[in-house]
Length: 139
Image 1 (tube, rainbow, N blue to C red):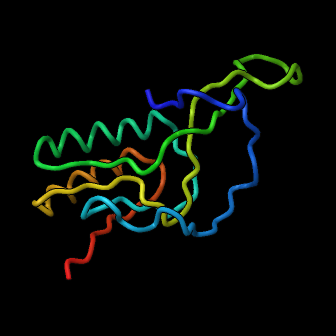
Image 2 (cartoon, helix red, strand yellow):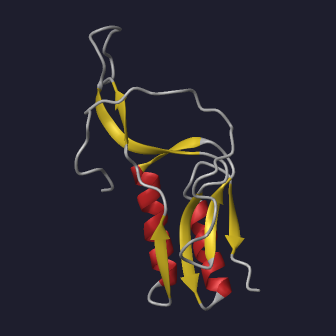
């Protein structure tokens, strides 16, 4: 399970509202020759990220490499079912990461361009946001 080893605070505050600003960090391919880029703002759960990792590894096998460019470091809390209002903040339910438009989520390197495309395409079906597959310019 993807989760941080150590946290400064057990329960974090939500922070600012989800605005649709395009991010300037993590927008270029650094490791592989293909990547999955987000087009929407959302929180991604650790289970969704793990499902994508599993799908990419299943398709690539030993014919390619994969890099994870995001990590779920934010705690998301939830009160249990049937609990009345008040009584403090709920327990930690899952870990998530905030993804903004333009963020590269996964990178893949493979000699076969079609194999990299199909791996990223099937991983995009596991995510609740719109994504785009980008390739490094070979010039």
